[in-house]
Length: 346
Image (cartoon, rainbow, N blue to C red; front, side):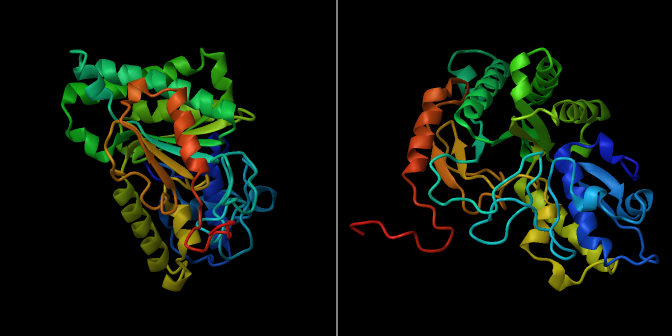
């Protein structure tokens, strides 16, 4: 994709928020003679210097607040109105929702649920069906899961749809997954219930063919103004390690260009360079399909997530499984590295 400034009005809320926070962070550090720095943000490449010039010297619209309602706090570290990360600094809000300043460790309902949707292929094989049919059933399960979590009051759902390692699977299966994603997007507008869902994509999206990139971007734009919606983030061609490595390279570019000092790189700033910026870290990670590992998913973001595993294969995953996961979550005491409040009898 050619470098260049992507108009803010054509961006999804999460990407626009992140760019504005980066502008806020770097604006005061940037002199007229600073060299252009190309960043990869939310799957879109843009020239920060060109973006600043195109927008009148880099002042963020509305004093730095993004369309989705997030703003960067102060001229130094970009801290949005997000929930506290592991008891530490707050991570940026975004995706069009206002968030309380700190997460409640004893909250009965997670605000953000992440799911590794595992078991589609095995579900099909046990029925002597093509693996592609398992993925099709899995796509239906995703629809039902997103709607049920929205009904319960969960604000964010992030799912692992296709990893960077999944390209090693048989070509027929890979093509089936990509085709299913195309169909999922094409059918999205035809279902009125989807007005309650706001879709985002994370991962190395620019490595996909242009038509897929466009379909992803189009659905983000179409749903970004859905009010009172659950934010569904779909990780596609995503890997946690590669995302961290990419963010480190981007931070190195900024330092090499003289825009920041190495000591400026803290958790808050680094988070802005990750694909998942704009939503709070997951409170609960669910994995279906009997495996008990995280498989390179959200490695930075799940540092303090509670985890729940089930033998249920993803196509069979139901509202009952969600209820069981949430019941287990309510029994956890989340300390974020600290000491839990004393409980009578401890």
